[in-house]
Amino acid sequence: MNVFCIVGQIKEMPRLREIPSGEKLCNVWVNVERPYANAKGVYEMDTFQIEVWRGLAETLCNATKEGSWISVKGRIASRPFHKEDKVYYNTVFVAEHIGFIRNA
Image (tube, one colour):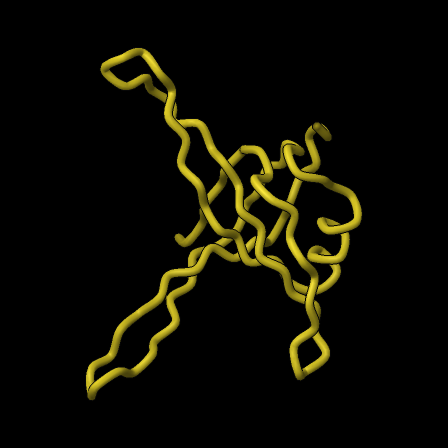
């Protein structure tokens, strides 16, 4: 099973771009509060970069603003790249569904 699910606030507005194949793409940074407080009683945030494709990317860019609350369900992908005869992997969070909870 390969799935992730987060709820958080958009940290900064994504920029919609078109790749050479003509598909739309954007990356959105989402702040997600941790489910527990640290030693000082503060709930820290994690920030995740989410990759959003095609119509979902267009909708996200048109329907939200910085600070908007969203839910994201998707999959985790790994992309190999070669450097100095070694293979390394980048991990990417790819959105499959976005719920629009509340605009800031």
